[in-house]
Length: 538
Ligand code: FAD
Ligand code: 2HG
Ligand code: ZN
Image (cartoon, rainbow, N blue to C red; front, top):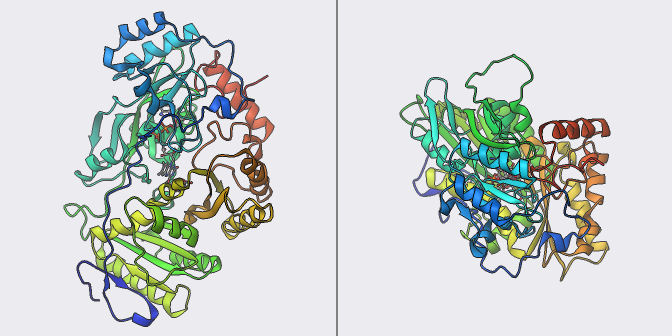
């Protein structure tokens, strides 16, 4: 096999046997920190959704409350300045905007406990916030709720290089924690495009899925322990480092995916896998990334079937996106990601392998790709030849959400559907919006991409502005479509404010009722992240 540094290995049928396509530009990891330039352009949630009424049993923040917060935290950790409040009040999409008059930045679990106990006693509503990269409006206030941010809770507490278990504060940034683990030959089992900004506590609260779920699984499996502060200030210390523990209800699971409605997660323990490219550890560290162009969604599925069969245990990611997504990345991505394939294709697939024996993995990947080319399953492809090219190919995929957000407004749907039906929803939605005459000045594009290996589609509809006509054309159609195909209306982003009243499409009335009873038990005053997740009990 020939490798040439600085170039991708091409798989184009015409060029098969010829290695060496000019490499693409190389990029920085995607950073998603919210840095809105102007405050005026983001409408308030309360103005956009007048049907949501502020709860009258919740108190407004007073000068005495702020004085109490200043008695617990240093002055710089109690933010009341209008300009500084803005980034905490507005979400990543600039779709939701609250009016919180105060943001609190605790550093310790004890401080969180004091703050929550006080808020509970005073009936002050609280929104826990991590990196504020959530995509369902869950991490920002709706009205004047207090934001408690984990920005300053960013210490690694311990790491055991035998078990690979890391214990850390909830505010550790995912990418920073992954870097810490990388230096020790390990990695976070979770990876996603917002890694440069999102917090581990936010990941746990949202039960984020991400790019390697296919291989490393759900946070419900990899998170071994959680430390959380309940609304009354009780510190629930469940920072277990044990893989097995069958004593009682597994309470930590309640906090994974609870989206800040039950308490504030202050610490997390995670079981981390070995890093395949840690040269000091593996026998022959091995990471491969290939990107292929495919003519139809049927062929994307055939590629997946073959990948599962032929790459099997080394397959670590299988992502797909359509030509609309690729077009947006080409046009808008800030990092100017370039398509390394020779022609545009209807679909693209990125596949990654993680292993500990390079010869073995390379042989598997080569046989697999040869098979795909010979059987005309894929039309073209490249294999990254070095770390920079691996980053470059991943960057094309990770840039899609940011590229979609450039149109002005983006409607995001994150659904689980049986794989054969995955792209049908995108096509149906495109025809629907066309036939309703909305495509053009208002709706710009309908884009499909996602975590094919997990049956998780990201349907993004870009528009010049958020407009009720567009919302009404999409909803509840999209939820009904998903429910009728036995899917879930949230595969990984959660419910937040966006889907609080739609949980019934994916969960029975009995299940929602039990969830509401749990909420009532843990948070009887309903101060934790109100208006989100599911409807308040009547
Ligand atoms: P936030 O946005 O701050 O909060 C998310 C929710 O958790 C809110 O309800 C908030 O109240 C609650 N919360 C936050 N911290 C705590 C805490 N300590 N205790 C209790 N509740 C808390 N998601 C995926 O699943 N897969 C992806 O591949 C993926 N890719 C993304 C790519 C981009 C570019 C962006 C912008 C987002 C992406 N997301 C993805 C969505 C998002 O869920 C994740 O970015 C991340 O898990 C959110 O973490 P955060 O710290 O930003 O949480
Ligand atoms: C991804 O997979 C994220 O890139 C974001 O989950 C998806 O923005 C979206 O719709
Ligand atoms: Zn995703």
